[in-house]
Amino acid sequence: MFKGSSWVSCNYDTNGETPYAQRTSIVGPYKHKLYLFGGGTSTTTVQNHFYSFDLISQKWEKIEPKNNQIPEPRWGHKCAIVQDKMILFGGHGKNAYLNDLWEYHFSENEWEKIEYSGDKPSIVSDHSLVATSDGFLFIYGGWNGSSRLVDSFYIYEMETKTFTKISDELLKENTSLRTLTVSAIWNDKLYVYSGEDGSYTYSDKMFEFDLQERSWKETEYQGSVTSRGVPAGDVFNGYWFIFGGSDRQNMLSDLICFDFESKEMISLQDSNTNKGRFAHNFMVYQNKLLYGFGVKNIGNFGDLNSLTLEYPLIREIIRYIEGGNLSKFYDYEIVCSDNETVRVNSSILKLRCKFDLLVEAAKNIGREIIENVVFYLYTGRYNPSSRSELEVVFFLSEELGILNLKLLAEGVEKVPESDNTILQDYEQLLQENESKDYELIHDEGSTLFHSWILAARSDDFKNILENKDKEKKKKNYSSIKIDGLTEQGANCLLTYLYTNKTEDLNIDIVEEIKDALQQLKLNQDVFEKVCSLMLKY
Image (tube, rainbow, N blue to C red; front, side):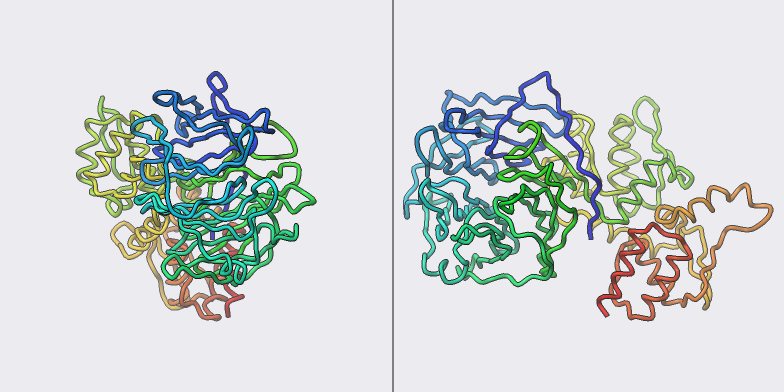
């Protein structure tokens, strides 16, 4: 499971334009930018300002569309990005609730009002809106000024510009009449979670709508979290992260996560009501969660906050590399332009890219860019230094066959299964013996491994390596012994340390690994991860 750091504020440039508004809509990222439209605190302050936020430069920029054509001021509206367009629907205008539909064309910097056909949707605000990449919008629930639209559900097809209303009776029978929800799409299903059930009571139920069969059913999940309304969420690598909302007594700031595969709802962070909010915005950018704006208890309304998510293995390797520890295992120098060099561990890079081509291409590329590419190859994380770097990395990654890095440079922010890809490469590294430099002695013999992998995960073993030269005369530290470990247990332990995989472990092996981790004095969160396997047997 993912582990998160603490939320940190995005300290963006305050010299330029900075929007402040409640009940706005922020969508993205699209090519490393977020897009914000409208918002306000009342009908007298409602706005139609349009901004982008550059996630690389950390700057807001006001957008002036062509011909000054722009949707009227509103709040409580919803937006989505589909291909190269930003879609906007509904909201509360200065004088009335709305059901108009607009498309913003990124390439043309132009808004277009859509004249749609089919079943005319309700005027609405505070609804949920999600979209599929092939051009279907799903609009659920909301408020029309006099009643909660607890049985309102429309599907819009962009190609035909047609709305279709899904049967009211179907909704009444299967979805407990809820509004003020959060929704997401995963594997041809629309999921709707939380919200109000029509009697001013918030719910913790979840329902799913099969996009092919056009049918609803309740989603039975494990775990217990606070019932809420008006939260916000986004999907990342098979997980649905949901933040905040209101339980009517308090504004919430907890982070929960729904695993689509296991159907588990997991509480990742408890709520701090001083930082709570609802009707806010929440997005995923690469491996970061972002939230901001909305209705909240304290502070301004123009904030953005981020939290970095990592698998335990990847987080520890990043920490190890950033601490300069991997330098002990560097075995190659890549020469960059102006004869600057980047020292690397070639055993990892040879698995992750066409290494010889990287060495040749680096001769014409600056050191900083090569360092960022190498860091990606180690960790799966890419943090560009500037927008000018993106084009260089795009073509370089295409030449080197690094598909995920090419997508990141292009601006496809949610690269599918990027963490799983690097874990697969580390699993391959486990099978490669040439660069292994340490021996794990167990009760049935010994097994070779890469010492830097264990050093990244065990502070105790890291200290052994740091003292290796000093203690060399007293003791040979080319091996480490773990008592009570069979050959199978040793292989399972190394597989876990390299890849985080814990499949096919019986209770005896689990006990061996628990004891081995205690002997290695591994970080507590890693130890708890393995101990939690006991619950499955």
